[in-house]
Amino acid sequence: MLLSIFTLIGALGMFLYGMNLMSSGLQKAAGSGLRHLLGAMTSNPVKAVLTGFGVTAVIQSSSATTVMVVGFVSAGLLTLAQAIGVIMGANIGTTMTAWIISIFGFKADVSALAVPLMALGFVMSLSKKDKLRNISEFIIGFSLLFLGLSLMKESVPDLKAHPEVLGFIQTWSGHGFGSVLLFLALGTILTLVLQSSSATVALTLIMLNMGWIQFDMAAAMVLGENIGTTITANIAASVGNIDAKRAALAHTIFNIFGVIWALAVFPWFVKLVQWLVSLLTSDPETSLVYGISMFHTTFNLINTLVMIWFTKQIGSVVKFIIKDKPASAEENEDRIKYLDYGLVSTPELAIAEANKEISHFGKIMKNGLEHIDNALLSSDSREKYEPFRKKLVKYEEISDRIEYEIVNFLNDLNKDSLSEASKANVRSLLRISGELESLGDSGEAISRTISNMQSYGRKLSPEHIDNLHKMVGLLSKAYEDMIDNLQTRPSEIYNAIEDEKAINAFRDSCRNKELSEIERKGDSYFETVFYLDILEELEQMGDYLINISQASKKPKGKEA
Image 1 (cartoon, one colour):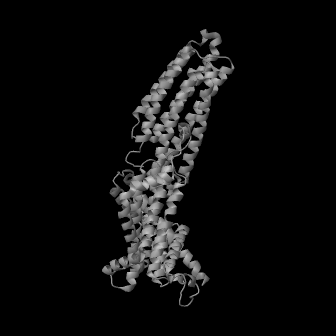
Image 2 (cartoon, one colour):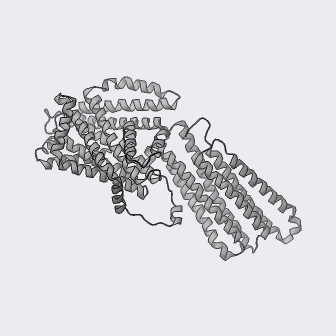
Image 3 (cartoon, rainbow, N blue to C red):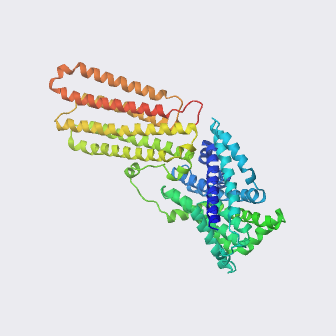
């Protein structure tokens, strides 16, 4: 008996692993197309629902879809109303998994084909083509899923021989509406523990098929699974922004509302589902298994048809519950804006957010350039200069912190789940992040040079300051082109190349002129040293900018 229990747990693990592998393979095969589909969402609630249904039906994971949606809301790619529509569609899409399990896991024994399919998947995994390797992952995951389901069916305890094993569950029946609530709670808890409504549906189907529970109790478990699955989105949103938390709460409100009305009409709703199934088949055993899938689909379909017209009202409710927190511009500047650790489980989508975060990082560092200019213009007065010195030190700390967040985020991605093009994209993002951080270092280095100059009682001449101001102007143009390149990922960077040439030429002109006049300057020699140090540091910033643009180039013939 103990061996059977451990076998059951292992079979459940195989089922969950197969589900994750299958979903991962489909997500990688879809690649950037998946994020483009979600990113192109319109404000039409019907289209939002259809998109959520389509994506979830393809990747076989409502949890993955809701996590993506939370991440997209956090990144500003979807509005709250659009996200609510997608989540509604995802709830319908996830019912397709129950139908697949019912048809292929119970009425047609796919497990007999699982091993040959795994052989096919292994052969495809040896291919050099990303697409074939991703499809092979789906095939192997599909095979493991149904092998796990078959083992679960075989390893469940025999209640006729050992009725005491799950006798406590059977005693829950026969208490009227109280039994419905008990099995609803069981479905919720199982889903919370397994973090997969599909796995709980599979267990429910097995319990029903083995005669452990009656159909109405299995239906109550399905209602509980719809509550339990909302925890995934809430976990993902816990590290997101306010809109992400609102999207997750909207998912919870939507499902709880559905469960409330379903409980209010539960006996009649169960009879309706049984009548619908009778139209499909007259076989009693088949009716039971198909009935749970039909109950799951009908529940989410009706709930969506009712709630789709109230997406704005749901949005207003969650906004009332989770209120905006006022934050200053500097506080926003000090934090990442787009990274959502909930998307780490969907690396292809996570990269899209990392790209946006890198562009945001670039804009932050451009703001630091203005403080460099102000520091130079006020360098003749310690009192005027001090506020800008503090800002440059702060920007160096901000750049360190943001680089750390981006690098950690990218390192947490499962590199095995990425296409070759996406892996190259990750490498370029890591390089860009380091270069952007170096811009913060340069700003602080310039502030130290000015502070040293002041400590020696030296001042830059008006001509020096004018030249450095012009250099900052050239850098400002290079910053704008760099940010544009980060956002558009061009195949050529002629704008950045021209900027680099202009910066180098102006640096050479200023340096040559200064060195040619150094002999006649006499005691002004020290001002020249400080001036040239600042000039070289500004030119070094130009090098970082061209490096960033080079790393942002899109490889020809590839899409990352």
